[in-house]
Every structure is written in C-alpha cells, then in structure tokens.
Length: 387
Image (tube, rainbow, N blue to C red; front, top):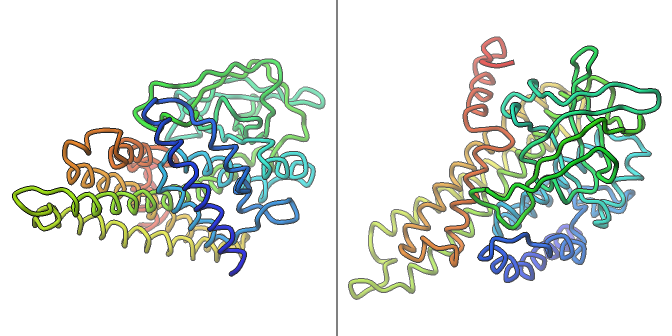
C-alpha cells in the first residue's frame, strides 16, 4: 500500500509539473519535449516493470490508476505511456528473452530507450493480418522490408517492436529493432486532428537487418503476441478515457458555478445540470467498467496459461475500451457546450479533450471492430464476422 501511494504521488507530481508546459505546447501545436525528461525525473517510465529489472513493480490496480491520472492531462500524454509501457514493456516482460530484458527493458525504465509499437500500415489497420511488411532470414540476421504508419512515438523511439510476415509461409513474427541502423527512413505526421504535442510517425524499412536474437517470442508467434499486447493497450486507453472524463467534469462544474447568465450562475440552469449529470454518469460508469476489466485482467495475469481467463479478460477489456472511448468523447462534447464560446477554444481543456479523445474510438480497435468482437463473445466464435 505504501509503495502504491508513492507511485501515485509521483505520477500526480509529474502531471502537475507538466501541465503548464503542456498548455503552452498545445496552443503552439508543437512537440512537447519535456514529457520524457519529467517522466524520468519522477521515475514513472517503468511503472509495471518488476524491480529486478529496475522498474517500480506497480501492481495492475496501481498501474491503471496511474493511467487514469495521466489521462486527465490529455490523451496524447497518456498515449506516450500506453505505447512505451503497456504495449512494449509488458510485451517484453511476457515474451522477451532474458537478454532482451537486460538490453532493452532495463534502459527503458530509466528513459535511456523510448519504445514504439509498429503494427499498423497504410493498408493494414483493423485487420493486421493484411500487413505487407515482410521478413526473410539471412544467416544470423532477419531482413525486413515495408512501411509502418500512424505509429505513436514513431520518429522519437530508440527501439520499436515491429510485426512482419515471412516471405516463405506468410506467418507473422515480431522483432525488436534499433532505430539507428541503415535502411530506415522516418517521417513525422503532423496533419493530425488532435494530440499535436506528441510524436506520430511513419517509417519505411529497406533491407533492414535485425539480429536473430531480436526475434520476440518464436517465429510465427507474432499474431498471438499482437493480440495479447492489444489487451494491455486497450485497458490503458479505457483508463485514460476515464481520466479525461474526470477532467472534463472538473472543468465544467467549476466554470458553471462562476459563469453568470440571466442573473444567476449557469449551474442553476436545468439544461446545464443535464449535461453535468451526463458527464458524471459517464465517469461513474467508465470507472466501473475499468475496474471490472482490471479485475479480470488480474485473474488472467495470475494464470497466464488459462485460455478461458484470457478470453474473459479480452472481452471485458474490449467492452471497457469501447464504452470509455465513446463516453469520453461525449463528456468532452458536453463540457464544451457548457463552456459555450470558451469551449470552442484550445485555451480551455474541454476543447482539447474533444479533439484528442476522438482517436480513442479508432486506434487499438475501432468502435466497429470492438462491437463485432463483443458480439462474437456473446454469440460464440463460430459467429465471428472476421478472422
């Protein structure tokens, strides 16, 4: 309990120190180069990593509470941690070799290595099995060719988990690549609707050599690795969305008590109260959905070989991510409406949440894909609408 409180205090102190910097960067639409340095200062870049690898060793309940707090600062900021910790650190913890953990996991805790996770391609989004990036084995190396697109941390990452298909049997494998080799071209993607202060990029690999020891898991295990990583990622998205709802509620209630119209605070107007009630219900429901998913995920973590527990956790996380992403977008919309003209400005936080949370309904499982996934979980896998 004491360690959990210490971790959450560090996360809160990080958020408070970052906020004024993030406000300026958002208004100037520029990359926030203080996220990583401040995260290093407060030692929060390795929250889920065991102490034996120099991490904080946070249990899943503390870890997700940390994501809720970071989510209050914005979807973009939370995305940096989702990618670095949920998608990559946790994948290496589960599938990485001891050598990979020593070489990549330990330095990542200190911020000496920043991670990215590259599954999405220009023509492979909701169906990763259609990806075009390929690999072939060449003596003591794998040679990768292809393009990855819309990759968070994509151009600032020191190491990336990359998914590619074999040129021989079309099976997917995962590799951790260093980004300082020959044959990689990166491009930052700045024409985004939201999250302007974080890095989103694309990169192309041309005959990019990766040491055989950088294969994550076994050959052909890539799809299983990706699916388990997405469970981790989606849970972080859901928690972050709950945090953004909480921030919208704080901003909307404070403003509604101060703003005077028709001789009284707008908080006394019934239609404003309808919006406040809607945001509060979104917050309560999202927190409950996240807590349920965390509990089921914890049960699976304690019994990783139990396929039924994995299925239940996967479904609960998918439901939480779908619900929270939509609730966050609606909560932000309501908060913008309460702030009125001020809401239609990035000077105020609800407008940023409105724009930024929209991506939560797209990445790591679109609304449509998650609805099909949930329906198949109810009907049975023989009724799956896709793969």
